[in-house]
Length: 307
Image (cartoon, rainbow, N blue to C red):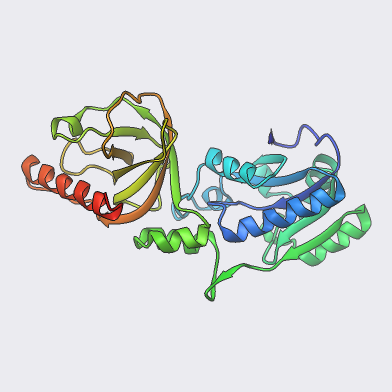
């Protein structure tokens, strides 16, 4: 998948386009992408996505913005997996936020992305103060020569598939429900880095994974699957949080103890899939109590996997 940043470079040709934040790339997003790629294949044109970095809510109200489900890299990888040919990442800043709907259509959609067919969600709004709507897009399409269609929301047992619904499920520890809304287990990517070897001192060596999520949408201890190593996916028990008992950290840390595994994996880029929550993160009175709890966590993970 080709990735463009900004609008200084026009797309190489006409496109079939969709627009959105695509945080988490859940079932609703995937239905939109499936329609996008189907229309693009019929038209013989590349399927293109316009997305934003940072998330607009992070720009307008960073203190109250929700946790990110996916980093930009994770989001682009998921979009590429769904067959998209081209992604344009728009830097969401003050000048972009000030574009009128008409300026957005002419500068971005027509001149830069050369849209021939546009597919948007049924709640799509755009332009300064979110003043542009579907009716304005359809009118502009008639003038500039591109088609516009809206996709209805996807529901699952009466619940709308949305990033907010996924986020709520993860925060509540309902990982299986989050996986249904996503169409796959929730996962986080990161690279294995050297840590303080504290887990090894307790008898449970862990892979310390550097993640870019400053406020991940879930915390606690989990049964996980890990992809990215030979012979995988591998199973494990993971702690995602701030390690309150020893060497408390400021940024969230993801530590994974791989079950029945021994090897040097420093530098590996891993994908950790969160399958089941075992417990909340907790502060223990001493290291012996922590060590005993980790042993119980490992056994609970093994029981989940029926090992």
